[in-house]
Length: 631
Image 1 (cartoon, rainbow, N blue to C red):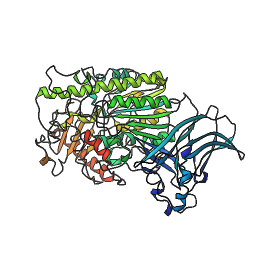
Image 2 (cartoon, helix red, strand yellow):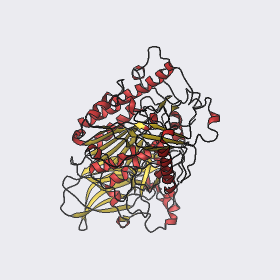
Image 3 (tube, rainbow, N blue to C red):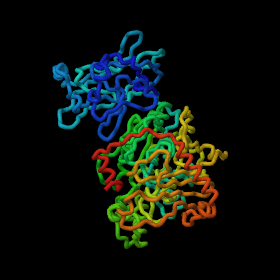
Image 4 (tube, one colour):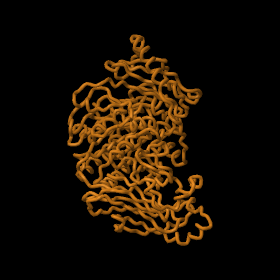
């Protein structure tokens, strides 16, 4: 696959209204609103800032900004059967209306829109393969858009030539190309689909021993793939844990701890590394803490989030519809697709009959919000009757069953229908679990018990290799990225991960220990590099040790019910006490002391990351409020 965005050099910009203009004149108001310079790994030269990410509706796309008259030339060798896939658009926003007197004089011509041309040039002679005229979008108070997607076959030629993208019209027109890629439809490479079901506990799935039939589709997938029975997240809440999943780094090394943090752009992501390996990278997510504003879109050719709606009852079904459409349109590419849903996350309120499927006949609640219904977030440590607790757990299990049917089962069927299932690496996992007062707390994000750290990991390999394998060795969510690269045969270059490939475990070869490391601070806190977070969990063999500095100032005063008392150091033998009920720190004093020294040394030596603050939009705040993260 050849990305024309990556392959375009500064010298390949043959024409542009911005050529020859000093950089001091090219402020952000010369480019579309809600766009920014492209920082994806391998994006190449970008002296004029024409390679950009732009937010269009609920998606963020990679574009070549091409205000007329623009002409971009890329050298390419066209193989037989090659296809060029691209989008074209014109955006009208407040920046496109900022014009000089000369530009205003040309605005009448701009009203007629722009012409888009795709040509081949051989030995100075051009052949036009495609042309399209787009009219200017209507004038409204908000931004408007005219956009089309196109796919054309390229005639086979035996020598290197130049592929030309050209726009004509008036400079006042904000025209652009989206994700122009040249590829040959091929079944040779495995596709990759990574599904993250937010807040999914491993021990509530049938393939992990749960008695209720919450997960028939995931259980079937587990029988056709490998199950890792003890998989640990790096953090007990969404933002830092997903950063770990997609960078292969524990929180100590990526340092996205609080809701004001963004991913440091210098960090390579899974999408970055796969796009360098000629994978087309796309995501469809639940937004909120997976929004591009936190840096998650880096490396993705397209990154879609749900809209600003606050009805959370059918998120998994909506997610599948977007996945299904995307697969139909992109099944011929070698692709990486990241899928994320908040369906299982509180509030628990799946549609009928799922919300009632696991309830007692006399259950009081048909839906439940663990934040709003527990004293508006001030009752996170509130005790309830056993009947109410069963009611809440039953609603949670209903969310799992609904997600299992409308997302996982439907996704597997879709992959089979398109002939993709056998050549797809399909992974189902989660970022963290959920607490149901096993340790005196609800929700997640405050403690580091396995209720919130142990997540499912099911990997269905191409051709169903490793079918039926169950790996009992503890592994981490940070092992996912190197495992995917290892499976598709892509090098990591000089990139260093905290995780390591899981393939040796599946080949029955021993490997180095994979100790648990997880930590958390209050999302409102500012992390100080070099120091220990509020809570850190680390393992030494079967012993898990938690170092606890307590809650931040003012937190307990805001709670109606006090949390259970926790010691500064607690240890649990996970082999004999999987429920983490008996503190054995006194019996393992030497191990605790050694782990404390190792943890302090690790955090002290961690390289401080560039601090980039995320600015919340009203839309993101509404999403986070609906999910109970802010009040």
